[in-house]
Length: 183
Image (cartoon, rainbow, N blue to C red; front, side, top):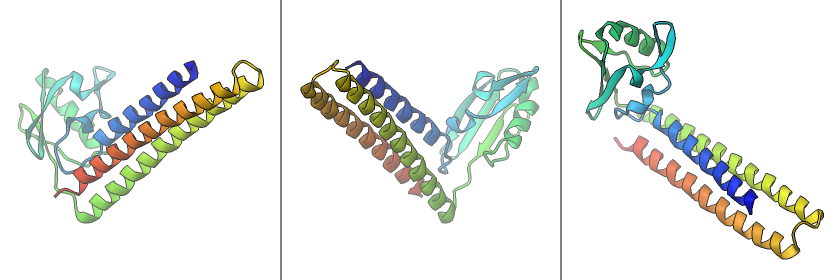
């Protein structure tokens, strides 16, 4: 039973990781999560932007970054330009504005393909966790630690958990796909 809990936790971590990854995918709407991977060299220490500035959504496609220390404005701007988010910030001396362009149809299709691929990778990770747990259960049976009935019950329970988690991945993929394809 302990193995089931560990497996469920592992699958939940995979799902959470997938959802965080989806948050960083640009879908034409301003999303502060896109800056999560951007590190600013702040007095020699790599620092996330959200720890040195207020990041807010001004309009549907505009992100505003207001640093608490105005002297770090240029440093933040350079870090964003050096990152791979593909948007150049505009600096008005007080704050930075990131204007998200509407993605082309071709770009949206690429993003959907990436989302589906990420979803499939998450499912593979979950199935591997299920397989590893099944091997542990069968090893316990072989060592006469559990009965045949226990094995069958654990297999059913493990399959239920796996199905539920894979369903969650499918829902997350479908939601992100819908968000990307909405013009």
